[in-house]
Image (cartoon, rainbow, N blue to C red; front, side, top):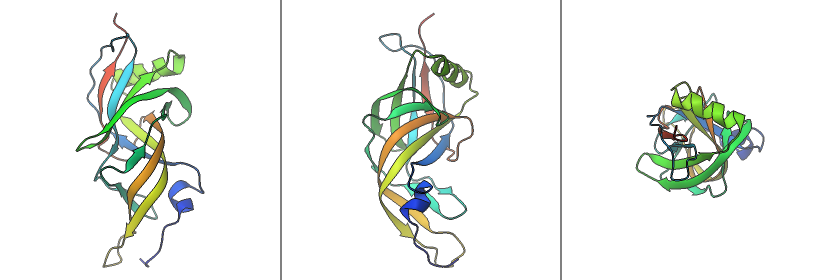
Length: 174
């Protein structure tokens, strides 16, 4: 492998948002204080590595500089809610998603509650990163994200990263 520099267009598919997906969660159903449906989990795991055909990447702890105003999406297509809280933990960026009262959000919530959908994905804009290269040249460059702006967290069935974890799924009380 030759020593190359990865460009912003390569990281984001020609300048659009980059999307990376994570998997695995524990589910508990319930409701918030207002009876709204919520999903919590790790939206971006820190220290985990993801490989594409052209580069590998990982997020540094604290790389999420801004996710205020980020939305919740269903499979990167349909908005289904918004981020109501987020914080850095040892595992990564933990997010709480409040789901709207729409048919798509209800379907996404049901699939998460049933354990069918097991992944979270993040749509982000890279701001600052560095590259590390394998001394043997056998591996593609490693992109280490130091600062990103998150635009969306999405529920998806087949994620790329294995360790984003939804920790809670809450529903209206029955």
